[in-house]
Length: 409
Ligand SMILES: Cc1ncc(COP(=O)(O)O)c(C=O)c1O
Image 1: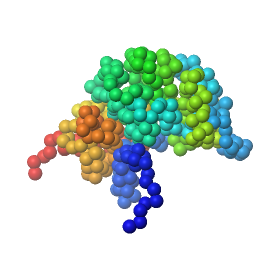
Image 2: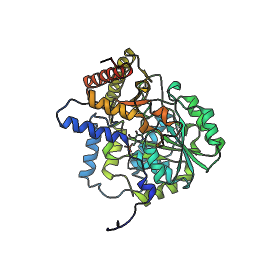
Image 3: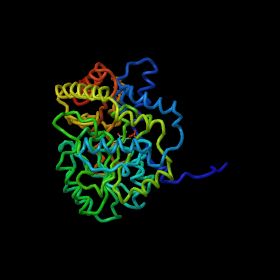
């Protein structure tokens, strides 16, 4: 038998894949077969990329701004990002602390690269599945910290303190994500200041994934970055992807403390060279241009959130009312199915696609936090019509009730 030409390294081969894709592919196949499918599983906004962004990008293309940029990005964009985070979130960031990267994913990866392989990284659980994937690829060991539905998915600071002091490999970072995917939770000021204090106490960096920082669904709330309280400990990851509905244009950023600027730029030079040049100009247009189109999108997210929340509440399901991003988690634990089976059967029987909770937890079913994630499913409300969202949510409630109290046949 012919031997394979090479073996992919185990850390790559073992990289977990996202379960969201599984449901997405199945849902698309059903839709292609002519069935009505309610797609509540994926976090890609269907809002149009604002005209300002399109025009700014086309102008850059016409002006032949198509070559490599500086590794850290064009000055205009670095300055615009610094201005935005300073004015919106009360930070004191200089433009040269901003490293423009191809999307938040690259920012997260760069942040991981600053950690010595073999170290541990604390990740929120439930949390964005790509944290697990990137930790494995960069040789970091995962330490999951709990976000409990009973606590509105805010972390318990005492538990964090204990984990940070636990025996084992050195801890390189605590990763936080507010507003959160999949929870929709905005960490409150006590949580953020508490985490900042813990980072200083234990001498670890905070990797703060703030990709949803500008999607806040309640007026009385504001996004708070740990960079405000522990600037020297924080690597702030952001992107224009979600707010400006430009996920494919790959414009993100990493804001680093002064002492890490050179190294972060070096990671860019060694890996991606730069973010797409014309999209960086689109990014300048996004931040500096008229905001009325995206303000309208925020209003839509609020209306969609309210519609879903009202249906779930009437049906008596347990869930958290999200105040940021465009996700919401529902407790389906009493249905007697694993979250994956729940999602698969829901799609099969009612034509509704949702993401399943175990995907957002530890890969190992024996892990103590696996079961808590496996009680949950995630609804994404960034795409689809109001009818689709209402119809899908009502069907989800119907399916849940049927599973909880099966009728005798
Ligand atoms: C929590 C979180 N972080 C990062 C990303 C990736 O963002 P980007 O498309 O800018 O790489 C996503 C995308 O869904 C996300 O949900």
